[in-house]
Image 1: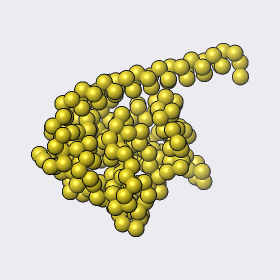
Image 2: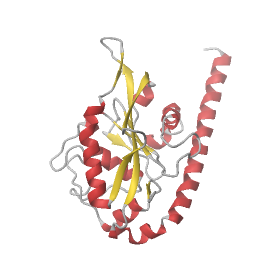
Image 3: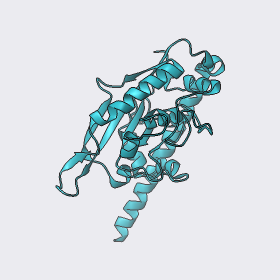
Image 4: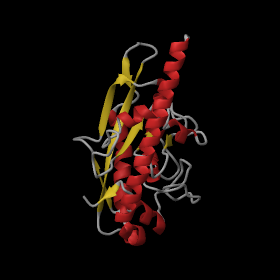
Length: 247
């Protein structure tokens, strides 16, 4: 690699890091403003009234089939329907929040081959935070619904990227500053002792400010045998999230 190429790569990394920092600064500002506007739900959200809404967009990434050499999606939209149904039910019954698609349908397939790092993101330790400043973070930002560097939708949708493999876990979210989550094939087909196909709802909960719970029957329990119970303060937090709106 020549000197020019080395300098070019360094510049690209710096630009990505700066873009990532700007995205975080904007998200922090938006989160603080929306938090102030949602103070009612932060205080009394446990009443689960009045009804609220959350906009969801699901993006299936594509890869090159190692056998045929053709471009294929990592899964088919029909495989996601049980996860969508489960998420709709949980958010409706536990939070009085109705899910709605960002476009005419919940699911979109990206036909172009996704970068390897976007197909196999890491959720080991603090990797998920660091990756938001790398090429995979830039890729996700380019395809996140409701944003073009700045928010273009006051509904602040959650985008779920369906990837080939999430290292260390079946799904991942960086929390309340996230506008996207990632979930792999095992997460799509996740089964457990209590509640099947709940990975999507669990990761959406993280994006709506919910932390892990130590109670196995709780939606935010980290294990695959989680239930769908929620606590009063979890309802307050989720209903006051900027992703959950009255409009």
